[in-house]
Length: 443
Ligand code: ADP
Image (cartoon, rainbow, N blue to C red; front, side):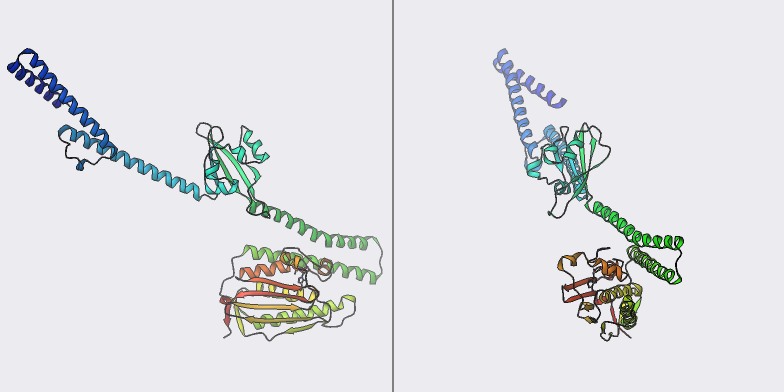
């Protein structure tokens, strides 16, 4: 910096000396002033160019930069480049940060000190029905119109989360949101939302299940304790005693079946999906199922006291020589449930047909009966636990209300499904459908 000032003084002095020598005293002052004006003018011009150049610096395109100006320009260019790099790094970090919040399965909404919405991720938009073009800088209480939320927002402390109704995608689907406010910075707030619909649903299902199990166990237990009391308090003849004991045995076996089915369900839920190593012979399976079906039909025929043997026409198509890759006990239980249901819900004299078919993608075991059939409104709920259409028939024949739930579970665990077709008055067909990947021709 010193050099240009010295050079300015040098040129002013030189101009004053030359001016004074040529034209006298006043000329020397004027010459020095002229040199100063030219120098400052040139400086101002260069500063203006520098200012314009800073807007889009390209030093190489400007051949006029020289000496000190070139140095200043180069330093500034370096500083600008450094600053640009830092800005780019910060912008990239901000982008990553926003992308991470976007990827969050929870809704995140940033509120300013007044509770106005500054930013929100897509999940929050879906949870609360927000629109980025419409709702920015709107007060959150005006948009989340839920009295529970309004009260919660008005509180000073937000230590616990509250549950509110979210925006539902469909009318049939009620969304439950868990909402919590967290304060950060100077009075700003972070609004976190979490979709807990499935958790709430699972909770309700668990409560229903416990209530159902208690009810199912209480009924035979009440009957049993009633008989025990009678046996203890009233003197009975040997025949009466035997009759009571038989009735007690029926209730006990009902409870046993229920506990066995509950255990099967919990095992299905708690174990890993079936592998492909266990080989199950379809012919062996069907031999056992057919024998059980004949016995069950005979037992049911004897319920009125008169034993008549098998009272259904049981048609088992010749079992194909196939091997299924899956868990034998599970497949046996699924197929037995379908066949025993057909026997239990088909009146004496009816026909039950069991057949295996396959196409390129599926292996299908179908169990058709000529029973009373099932009205269409019951079909979607049939495989729910404890759902029964014919409650008294189920009880009379020792049903637990869990058979189809087990069958559906087994089918799904093996990569298949349970299909139900039925027509009232004509009968039903229950099919266990498995993928052909589980089929292996018998060696
Ligand atoms: P349950 O032990 O009561 O038979 P399931 O889960 O096996 O329980 O069946 C659920 C309900 O579906 C039964 O209570 C019955 O009302 C109905 N159902 C099942 N199979 C048949 C069938 N083949 N024909 C008519 N109704 C059936």
